[in-house]
Image 1 (cartoon, rainbow over the protein chains, first blue to last red):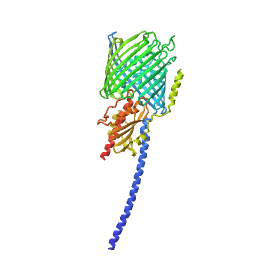
Image 2: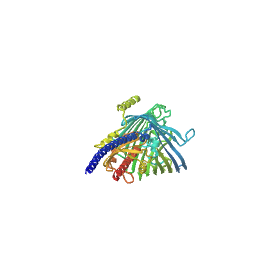
Image 3: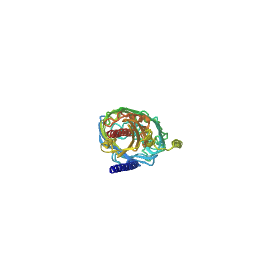
Image 4: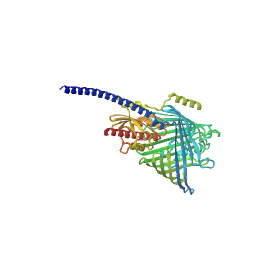
Length: 375
Length: 173
């Protein structure tokens, strides 16, 4: 009996002791879990602040685009052909972020593969500017930059537009790619309205031949400057509505007795909804000169439809009146294009189109094929 | 005359104070999304999930893990994708597998600024993810801002995909 009592007492004592020890173990384990949790959070925080984002943080970036064209065209007008293959543009972008508010951007282009004396191509510095952010919604550019006009001039990477070759209105009237040296102030607002004001070097061609007037900021004569203003509205998704006015104070750059001032007015609208895009653009030069060059203008209308992310088709009509050279004025040069774009990757495009020109445009009919990329 | 115009431009420009393109700090965006903010969690991006994300991005995925905040059916994601040259930081709130808020928190690009305004971002509200990882509705683009628009679409799809993954992990436990 005494032994039984002793055994029961011993069992109770052991149980009580082990229960106390168990509780202590639990406390200890909980403490360790809390410590591990804290340690884990710290590790995660450290991971967040290191490795992954560093790949984006490089201050210097490169990019570029390029396009290879094949033209197979013939003209009954003077019984001539244009059958050629050309790496039309090879472009590299270099950019550098000095800090959050000051950056550099440049675009260096090799046209037609080979440059040099007697060669078809050219090496051109199309952009090289410093941009200063002055607020969340405004900045100033100083250097060589693209004139804010039209559609193609500022956005001309091949995957972004239809057609192997660029349209004639933005080649001869605007004249893209058009860059000048100077300073530009740009601002935008939550309503979707943005504007740009620029003072730049001017065109130089006393005969009023617009495309030939580009000095390309190469020892450019700066006797007379150009003043550009653009207003753009993109406040409704899918819509772009823009207008540019430019005043050239003297296309002769002081080389003639009378100044040859000129005004360019350009307007365009583009609306995209559910894969369908409609575009219309009009550009007009009024040149203060007593020749046929006094009025030069052109329009473009284009409709396109993107069936999927990979395939789209388009049809485009352009017509221009322009001073081709010092003695030739071309009136009513019209071209119709229809074609297809195929994007095997969002940054790579294969294009094919068929073009038809009227006699005033040279009567070159035929097809074009191209491949382009951007990165 | 020219100098007067230049001087006027500079005065207008410098009248604004210098500021970064940060419209909301990511931490503030997360805090706003919860009455009581949960601890951050991490999802590791590997295997099939990595492949799916790379298919959406159309390039290599640089993140090995993504931090997120989750409380019941709500999850919040802070993600980045390059538009043309620089990453755009976006905050996305998902409720019951639908986007309830998408906001551009930091915009570092020089073009495509339109994507940070509500007239564009409100298109993402209520969108879900299709079985092929596309969005349930088409996003209307902005002319001249194609790359920024594309970046935001990709981030919306990735957030929905990651949300689907973590929700399925919870339900299988």
